[in-house]
Image 1 (cartoon, rainbow, N blue to C red):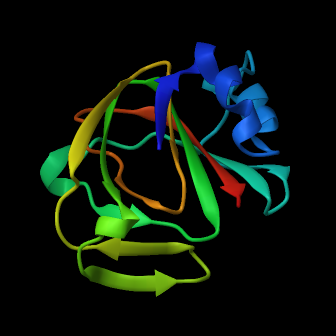
Image 2: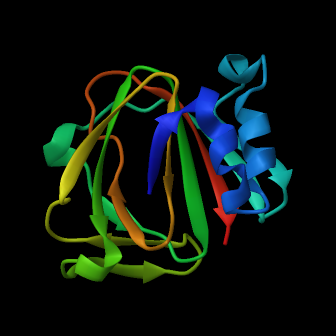
Length: 148
């Protein structure tokens, strides 16, 4: 798991061959004006999801994980908060893995909560359980899905 500001993203570009392209997309001048939905960057290997959700708070955020993709979650506006827990310390599965969605949910709580203000990004690898949308209020964010 990585949590940092977009201005420091180059430090992490070597962590995966597609990270440089992902961070370049997040630096687009028109990023804030893109419509909600999926934007293809490199087919199923790299794509962006523009979102405008409401935060759910700690009680409403669900602990999830992916097996095929890493998430780069960038906060454009609002105040996001993420829960995190290592997969090695995973609680019981609450909803089994669905291959088509690359998603499974876990019971229990994150080990830590991490604030993520506007301008910050978090990277969650398959070994990271995470609970997004744990902040409050309106959010504007972009989630980049990177095939690992």
